[in-house]
Length: 275
Image (cartoon, rainbow, N blue to C red; front, side, top):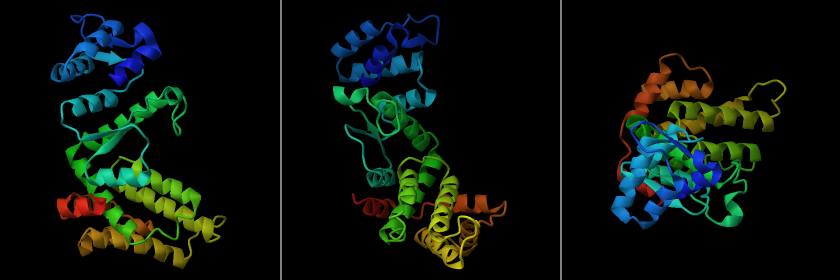
């Protein structure tokens, strides 16, 4: 209902268009009246029907797919009335959920939220991430597995010496809370922000060359990921080449296969998440 209310406020009568000519034209006022008086189960069915049969102005298909998946009970999303910290989002993703933030206070609804224009755009951003977290079951499992491994390596203190670097901290927070993509891309991104950090603080920005000490530091982090993930020697070699920036074409498939294995059980996942 929050979603539909925002659409009608922002776009008026143009808030939606029908997908099928046999359907009635959308009427925001009538819809909200019907929704206000509907009980729980009929309300859910009504919302799903609207989302399935109408296209909403300025809203991507990922947003409506996430809403319908949530309403049908297929996707485990967590409704929040606040913006969670990156570490909290990481723990949620380990547990197999993602936040959806709705900010209803009048003084915040139309103000910028982080880097988003307003609360409604921020809501859509959360729903798009939900789509990329849940829409592909195999990718979902791999993402969760990587988040489990990152949680374990963070707990070891592997990134403690780098967090004082604001640029690294911001990029790392993005990785753990706002990057729902193929885990191989996430690992490459992790290497990139580590390289940038060590170039800044190792004096190598001009030359673009890492010191031996910096290369060893990056290698240790990826070694920890491999150990926590119980990578085989073959899989570890592929991950090490990624860490060194020397991947060969077959390495991507090897690393993906390692992340597909379900060797981290639910009990360990929940323990790492602090549940």
